[in-house]
Image (cartoon, rainbow, N blue to C red; front, top):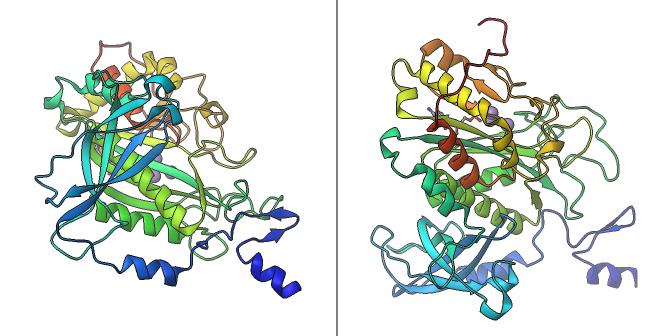
Length: 396
Ligand code: ADP
Ligand code: MN
Ligand code: MN
Ligand code: MN
């Protein structure tokens, strides 16, 4: 009887009265059976295209279609539609939302061994009449970049995220309904089973991203147990938003395969635990050239003058994170400094010493919309001059 019950509940685990949907880290599907279908070759006549869009909450959704085989360089993906009444993006009596393909990546989940690639297609959303729908932040951001191609603005986004058990509340490395015995300190960039929780997932997502063609530039374990980071960039202009969004989609797909819950919430654990952000590193061509430090300072003054406007669009629940503690600046007051991780904006030591380079906006939350953040930064730094602000450090 006991045995029967345990085999029926093979994928259910009861720990301290909590029933998990399945076992964290284990697929509910038998890998041997799944492999049987994965090993079926794709026909040379067709490719599979996964159309990805951003929903009303800023999260990714996707659906699949078959397209005639074509190589990635010359493919022209057709527009497509989805049922917007199911995503709060259209009314039920006129439910079609039209996806316009913006950017194509290689699909790392449907690898094939012939000359073709299955693809992931980042899309933005329009009404059938061709108007951008209200949640189309990409369309709005494009306006900020319009006419500024000569600036060749680069963004490097540090995407932090938190890995959580399938109970959707216990981060990796946390005991159930209790706090880790050791405070923050040993977990950042850590190694060892007692320090790094979920590296395998970050590594899998990293590999999937780099295969897809995303400019993923690094990764590291973060300060809170279960928290991890990867960086995307530098990417030019609107491409940063496309790449960050697709990287989030890929990470979520990897977490689906691993059966691990992933959140971008900026403060998943209350108390003395770091929140999660999306530090946004920025430079224009002028900032990267000799004399660039002066251009960087001017940009920072402009950002300071519009601090409240930026905070407003830098992510939901960000006020729980930007407290002035845990390597953040208080959201009440704008500040900047060299190598200062308690400032709103940090100028790296190297940039300061070289007199050129980039700056880091530390304010965006990990669940921010990358189109809004990059667009807003662009709009502000291309805007009118602003009064000088004194830096928040001793040496200057
Ligand atoms: P941190 O020291 O704050 O943890 P990271 O190494 O995690 O910084 O991330 C820095 C990001 O900045 C990377 O994505 C990197 O590609 C990007 N970056 C480097 N140089 C520039 C530049 N000139 N302009 C914009 N982004 C840059
Ligand atoms: Mn980083
Ligand atoms: Mn970080
Ligand atoms: Mn950073």
